[in-house]
Image (cartoon, rainbow, N blue to C red; front, side, top):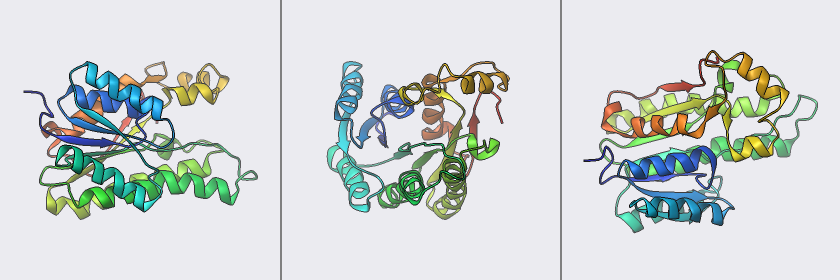
Length: 248
């Protein structure tokens, strides 16, 4: 039997990148998956199609996690479609770098609303349905440890996600709901390519400081989510797994 057979998962921001890879991996491990997207319906539909072609179950659900009604609707869709909820992966997030002189109110609220408020609102909605053995997985970032320059707001959001992970692990632990985080390093995704990070001097600098000597791939992260969602991680909660090739 597959590790996640009979389980139902939500992955937010799953139309591309790390989220898409996690959604596919959870489905391959046996879970039925809600593939959430904010704007790219075509991307989410492609993920659902890939899961279905591999014999899995998935449905695409639109929603902006920074709005309470949308967060609730995403969770409601999982319960309506599949009858239960066992796993929540809070992957939705945006990153924009700005020096202290460039920070604006709009920049601050955009990042904190999606990266932090979105994590809280989706978990709030999901916690009503997560039962014994439920798993919440927050996708944070190694930036909360290495605190790079010109990233005060983005790094602040990921530091908040790490702190939220610990707090919710204590709050939900008595219900046997586990809350953990994965903190990736630089991962090669559509987003990092579009932002011209991949192939840049910045990437080369990061690689030079990474003991394993390369950028990460989405396939380096997805198996960790499967592990944290499964009974193999039944004694882990409040943890942050740094998946950065040794960069810290």
